[in-house]
Structure formats: C-alpha cells, structure tokens
Image (cartoon, rainbow, N blue to C red; front, side, top):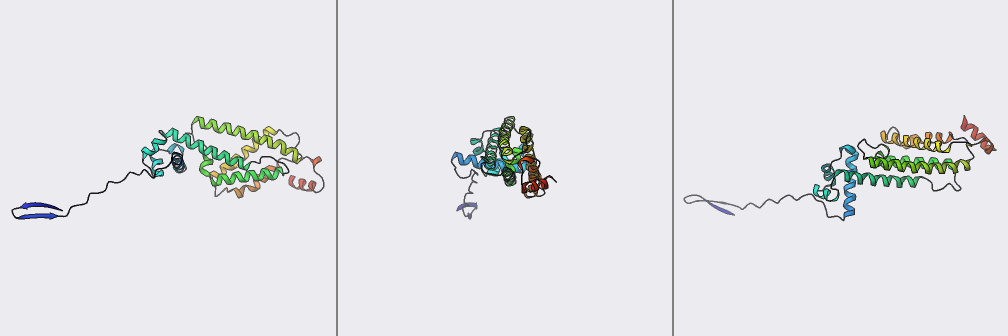
Length: 242
C-alpha cells in the first residue's frame, strides 16, 4: 500500500496497484523449421484461397498463422519467396495426385474403363483441393514467370504420357486405326482440363457426378474398328454409334 500526506494531520492510505502484465507477442509455439515452413505455407494457402494470389501479403499470412511477422520473415524474408515456395509445394502435390490417377500400365485392363476411372479420380481431386487446382489450372495473372514455365513443362510431360497410353490402348481395344495419336492426346487432355475448370468455377452446378456421362461420351468418340468387333460386340458398337 501507499501512504500520502494530504494536509496537516490528514493522511491518505491506498492499496498498491498490481503492475499490469505486458501482453505477450503472438509468436506461437516453437516449432522445428520444417514444421514451421508447413505451418506458414498452410496459412498462405488459406489467404490465397480467400484473397487470391495477387492479394497475398506478409501481414495477412502472419495473422492467419497466428505468429508475429518477424517469425514469418525469419523463414521467408520476402513475399515473392513465400509465394514461390507455396506454388512449388502445391504443384508438386498436384502432380503426385495425378500420378495416382493415371494407370501405370494397361496390362489385362479395359482401356476405356481405365480412362474413365482416371478422369473421374482427377475431377474428385479437383473438387477436394480447389485452392491447389485453381493455382494449377487457373493461375492468376500475377503468377511468377518461372511458375508458368513449370506448369508448361509438367503439361508437356503429361501429354507425352497420355500419348503413350493412347497408343497402347488403341491397339488393345482394336481401333480406331489410322488415328493421329498425338493430336488425340492433346485433345483429350484439353477436354479433361476444361472439365476441371468447370468443377472449380461452380462446384455445385458442375459436380464430378454430373460430368460422368460426358466423360463416357468422350470415349465413344474413339470408335473400334468393325473388323475387330465380332458377335454381340457388333450390336453394342452399333448402339454406341447411334
């Protein structure tokens, strides 16, 4: 307590006020560097999903992660470095999802069924990870040039893989003979990308389930050779051609 003399014979006694605790800075728990990177990139992805790639700021990411800005700057000194790291991570994870959907081979498989299954698995991945696939299929104008180059290279490798599978699939299914496999590969990949963008643009209007019949119809645009179709298959081929 404190004692203060107000006047002759008059004293004022007041209890001592406890010192106010200083607010602690929000640095979050101490994490190993790999975990801290993941935490910050997860926060950056949330910000990108909410504000778009051009709207990402260090302040917004730090706030989303629940850390002080010095913690963010210690890991990613600049916003471009943070954005590059986010884009590279999401692209790598997206390519891993694609590898999981594309069959490794077509041994003892129905090529048409494999194509349908791969496309539907891809569309489900797009629906489940819209932020990731928006960065891949619909990169913003502010995306770095290096990232656009990365997308272009990855797409080229994907087209090459599609062409390999098409060559084998056409041989296995018996047609169409004389098809320009390279051109068909580009067309079919472009078709899949369009469907993915529809899912991203309006997932309620264009859920993967709605697109199933369209995917099956795409397969029917590649007819089997009549000479390779016998018995009941002739009837089925005729019905598909109607």
